[in-house]
Length: 91
Image (tube, rainbow, N blue to C red; front, side, top):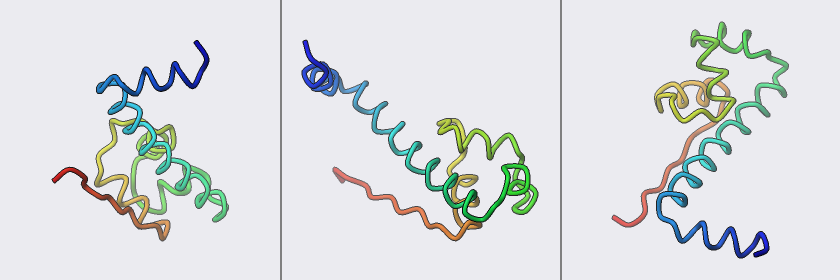
């Protein structure tokens, strides 16, 4: 079985597909935050002090950890001049 067939088989599994989509969502947020933070020449610690969010929260967001509150993510994004847009499908 090649990678493409394996991937297609995995995406037929609903739980796997949902997990993959969640991780992809978190990874995209993480990448955007890291890119902007670096462009602004800020360390994680400097960013946490600047926006008054614990350093550990910044680290978890940048690691694409799914256990961070959406409010914390939005606060970091807003303070970096980014906006989060979410669409809801199937409603």
